[in-house]
Structure formats: structure tokens, C-alpha cells
Length: 224
Image 1 (cartoon, rainbow, N blue to C red):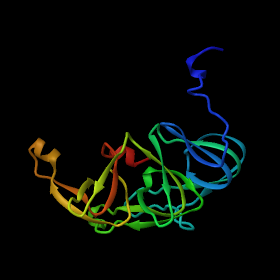
Image 2 (image 1 turned 30 degrees about the vertical axis):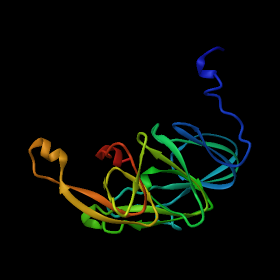
Image 3 (image 1 turned 180 degrees about the vertical axis):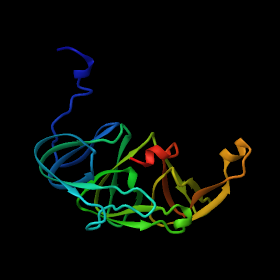
């Protein structure tokens, strides 16, 4: 059988070491030798001797459903083999979290991660219920974190002299040592339409980086 589909560009290769790697722009491969975690429904293929255990929301520190937000149900993957993960053909990226690092990320952008990482749900400081109740996942420890993003994300440096304002629906995550608060301003969209609505942004101050998706999250997308 001949086709460009069967070229080396698309053909997966055996894993030479355990762990996470980018298979292509839209998927992540994980060579499992023990245990790892992934969002439920994200596994698109696997081979080998693997077992999948569904993890309930709000149990044992799992990424849980927030009062006004969407939860991220997880599954544990155990055994030996290879698994591929993806979510709605979104772009995939890997973050290496090292000892001393703190990376705060929106739960909707988490695809999979090493079991060596610790994580907990925290309310974003300065963004309580009046800001829509922003609940993010804080990752620490040492290991790899697989993320998805609708489009190619922007990584914007934040400095003490130049804070960054981000739409609350567009923020993916940010590094440690950044102070967050809510900032209200006239909505640019409302000004175009001749309205007088307010827009709410997340203000980040300090020194570090903020990751932003190149589009807002629609109401339909938030339901997934």
C-alpha cells in the first residue's frame, strides 16, 4: 500500500526511554513504566500492558470541580507500554518542572503529567467570586507536564516595571513570584459596538512569565 500517509513523517517509532515526548503538534506520547496521570477521555491509542483507573473529582487532591468553574476529571495509567494523548486537535506542549519551580496552570489546559509532580487546586489571588471564581492548578516538584492550547500560545515576560494584563478567559498559566489581582476596564468589544460594558482582566505583577492562548474561550468550549 502506497500513500504519503504511511511515510516516516507519520509513522510512530518505539520509545527508547520511559516518559513523555511530543509525538506531533497535536499529540503527546507517554512511554509508561509505572504510573502517570492524564485527563479522562484524552487517550487516543495505546499498546502494551496498561491499566486505566478513573479518578473522581475532589478525591485525594485530584483536579476538582470548582464552584463556578469546570473540573478536570483525571485517570491514572499504570503498567508498561505506550499511550498517546490528545484533546480536540489542540496544540501540545511539554513543560519541565524542576525542584523549586511553581507553575500555575488553568485546568482546561492540562493534558497529562508525571506522577512525580505534586499539584493542588488554589483560588487565584485577587480573583474571587466577583471575578468568576478563578480556580487554577498549582504544580510543584520535578517532572514533565503536558499541556494543550487552542492555537500557538504567547509567552509574555512580566517585569516589576511592566505588569501584564490578560483576559481571564485567555490565560493558560504563569510562573512563580507573580502577584495576581483583578483589573476592570472598558471592554474594547463594547466600545466597538457602542456599548458601555466592563471587561475584567487578570493583572500580573512581579517577575516571571505568563502564558496566554491566542483566543478567548467560548461558552461552548467551556462546557467540554
